[in-house]
Image: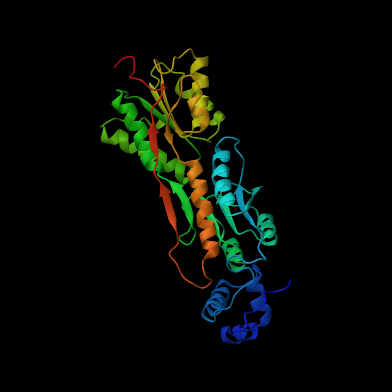
Length: 345
């Protein structure tokens, strides 16, 4: 693989001599090869920065494809489109196109994606994942391809730029709304237990319940997935008994849709017999019957901010250290017709 061409002020031989490594090692670092010891890679990167070496494609050069790449582990036609629309709007402002990729699990993309993105050389990458493995981060940075993690499912590494939302505050606001209506038996259905956003929303629920002095039945906290089936399956169990909850806080609007479906099956009226709060405020929420009370998560703006951040990082001078950007956008409660005071209030 051809290595990058050095600037006029410094040669690869100069860098190799100062770092105490071979020219082939320098080439591996510049080309993002994984078979370089972390300490060696760090030493070489430090010398490159100190000597002002300019990688090919550093900044916004003509060697880069005029693309922003957004990567999901799966596509949800409604939720994902909000993020894609946000990324696309910013890309258009900068004369860039958008490439959409589906790869890996919710924790990280596959290795073959890394190989592909190195060939595509986009201006920047927006990742809808928990984090990016250290070796992948090093490969992207070696090729000066900035990445931003949006709506992180986990707690990203300190050196990983990210854009998320205030999940704990959203769970708190949703549950407080139900408590203020007079509900005392409130269940919570959320996403996978290994996702930080799921845990944060439930922590907000717990905080609201504890602050109100309300007991929490452990059986009324359910972890699953954020799809319709996740809400439907848990709702069937939660609503089957006589001492059922009078309200359900769902961790996504799609889960809330599953809860509404089960309520209809059981002959429960919403909101007269059961109040339901969702999360995300996807466009569908305002067209359901009844219209869904939900926590507005600014998905489109999250996509916009992630794209802007990736472009800003791409334009930053090489070798200039800067704090790792971490951004959490505010959430807000949108009250509609799926919540009301319980019948026995």
